[in-house]
Length: 430
Image 1 (spheres, rainbow, N blue to C red):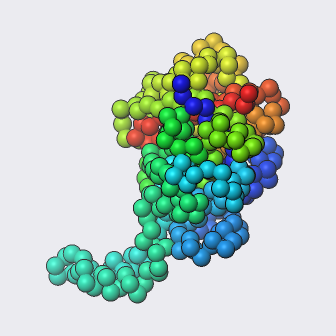
Image 2 (image 1 turned 180 degrees about the vertical axis):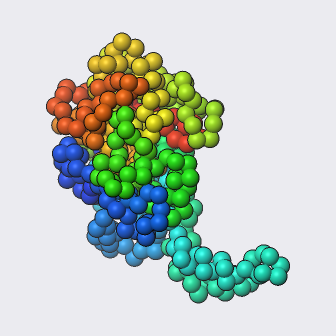
Image 3 (image 1 turned 90 degrees about the vertical axis):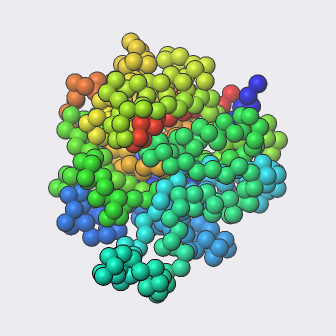
């Protein structure tokens, strides 16, 4: 029999702040973290706004451990800070309750932004116009002078997982998945699987990402995936609304401490919720488009519900992927209708991306945290900026206002470029 997996700690770094309850209150109030871009000069870009993390100081989270990690890149810093908060929230700080080899890390981690000015200067300086190729020796000389410390080179997607393992002496399984926007949901599902089968007792899991830089914004603009409402950026993220024109790029991290039930009980941990179901599929269709019939999304939800042993009427709330693109919202709605049948109209669905923007690899973990908080407080976060109904999106999207509700079991969706679909089910602990 599989071991039960519970959640004992949570932490996040978001465009609405960094403390657990403070951000939650702002989400319930419908506040937006979207503003004109300040990380780089975006005045000539089609999209000139984003959901940036503000007032972030890694030293304030790590204290005496800061020096070991001070050279980490922006996204890694977000992951470390969120992990520090989650570790403390779980009551693990300073306690030798779990053997280090039974503590693992599984992240949905993405590459962080490099110093583009210095990178380009080094690349141009190292170019041999006669041979029309980079001169390795000249490149090395310029790079050594212009690119600073490890921060600018630390682009491996698993950097956050490595830093977190070092910080918490997590000597167990260590993995990173970069399945685009589904990454942290997949990481959490796979981390739960490791605990279920006995490979670890505690997993530090979630995701961290930062793509608010010229290359990231250019790529998404070229795909016409980003909203271009530069004149009304506060309301630009409008999932399921008829006038939606793309998602808003965000950044941040969400980390949860997953724990085997008996391990948590032995150390007297406070149990926040239980992960009961996980489903993962691939569309096997196109690189950027979801299958128009929603077959992958449908399969992921069905798989998670089967794993959890629940049916449509057992789900009290769906945390939607809900990006605000025309295709995603329509297909996700279709998939929910296929899975839930006639009950679909009675299940509340909302997307906190309307306030936080899209945190890419960090999105799913942050959204699972909102599910746990919805269970704790018996209230659902809204989908803000919802004004004009779309006939292709005809569910209950909890429009504009948080809603008190009886919440015991939540389903959380994440769908990524490449056709990756992942769904988690979390419920109140009994």
